Length: 321
Image (cartoon, rainbow, N blue to C red):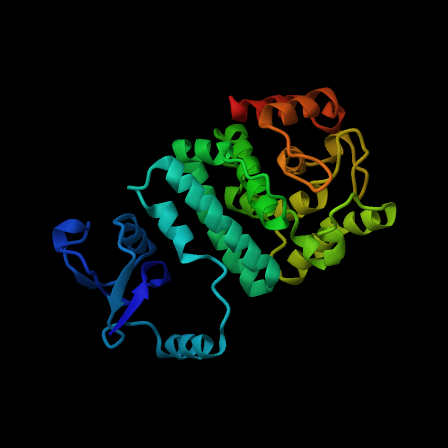
């Protein structure tokens, strides 16, 4: 008998729930997990841990042996914090509290991924991102609070989550009547848009002053590095490719890495570009203060509008009304 975290449950495990039968949606306190929906129901019931009887579980012995070997040799934490799934599926948590928890644990997830962007970790992170995307698409109240949360800290992890939430929220508004877009892969592209920064020197990433032209040339390579990482790990879908490569392109052709302009920039890249610039303006830097949302949007409208598709920018502004 082993007590495990609810978020670590797998199909085939024989679980013993700690609550009385009338406190959860199941007919029995003991049963074999046969579907992901059962795991989600346990999470939604607020059950944080359960007992698992390995003797009655039907998970393959090979998988159990592999899991045991991994747990012996592995000291790092899982890419997806168990608390992230708990926050997403907890139906009793108020929307504002849920939004704060989802943001916090999503930042932790991106931090762990960036520390070790292996193929396995990217696959795991994409699973966590998909669950955040599902929350944004299905829960308007929590989505609204996610958009209103402001974190003036500027690091790659916080920025990745902020841009991911903003860009998925705009995509939700744009594509609500269409089934032609893979929202999970779009979400992955938006959250992973800066993945290539892991190949940029830390003294450039963390420099407290404005970058020199030579340093900027290095920084401008990160979209290409992100593309390479996703290709090498076989996670380069068409959505991810367009977003990662084009999120610094500008509508007037002044962006990078290819200097694309107008309709040469895919809609997905244009969406990410808006979210990326907005969050950068909002964020605190050593050489300037972060702007309030209204002021950031004003600068984008009156000083940078030629960088964006005008109608798309107008729809982006509606996210904050």
